[in-house]
Structure formats: structure tokens, C-alpha cells
Length: 181
Image (cartoon, helix red, strand yellow):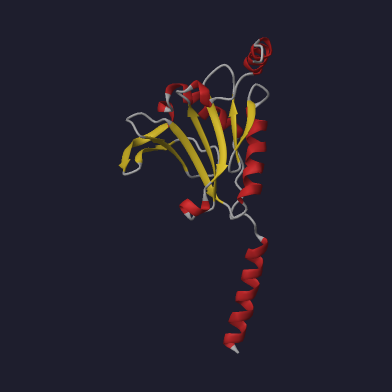
């Protein structure tokens, strides 16, 4: 009798988990995201909390601000934080990535450009600086984890940014002016 009851209870738990697509559904904190974006200009130094931890993958710092979920970290391969990273586990990466990208777009406002990247990911950038906000999911085959993440960073290479509408228009005019051979 006890075995039958355990199997029945296990079946109810498994069925309930099968309908739960997200492990958690944290909200994006718009004020925190904008604080992080502003802090990117000083390499997030104003957000560091505690000392640097040296790992085999690089340096990490705890942060005082959590824009998405509660597991946010500052990362870098140098002595200065270069990336702000938050991630949460989610079984339905495609939906979670799309939902997070829509929330980020809403928080950032109209001056940011949205560009879809490979392996469902989205990059937000603006013409006036070199700060980007990337939203994406982990590569399950590489990490064996199903997480959706948010990364804010300042780019060193201008070619990584999304082009401004003005630069696209200028490039189009130049291309139209060059005769085909």
C-alpha cells in the first residue's frame, strides 16, 4: 500500500513539474538595469562589493545590484571588472530569452537599437556610447545547463556595436555612389 501511494505521489509531482516550464520567473529590475548600464562607463567599479576572487576562468567580484534574478556577478580577465552577468535556470530557454529581451527593450527605452544574434540571443546598443546589453541562453551541449542570462559590458571594438541608423544610411549612400564593375 505504501509503495502504491509513493508511486501515485511521485506521478503527481512529475506531472506538476512537466507543466512548469520555468524553474523561476524573476522580474527584470529596470532601475537596477539602468544603474548597471551607467556603471559600465567606469568598468562597474561603483558596483563592486567585496574583494576580487581569482578563479581559473578569470576574476569575479560580487555586485551590489541585481538586475535579473539574484545571482549577478562582475567578471573579467584583468584586474578591473569588464562584464556584468546575471543568469537564472530555465527549461524553456527560447521563451525565456524572448521574454527577457522584450523586458530589456522596454526598460532601456527608444534610444537603444535591438539586433538579433545567432543562437537565440539579442544585443541592445546605442549610438552615443559603446555599452551593450546582451540577452541569451547557454549552449546546452557545451555547459549542460539550461540558463538564460543578461550581460552588460562596454565594448572596446566599435565593430561589435550595432550600427547607428545614420551610419547605415551613410554606408548605403556610399555603396550607391560606387559604380559596379
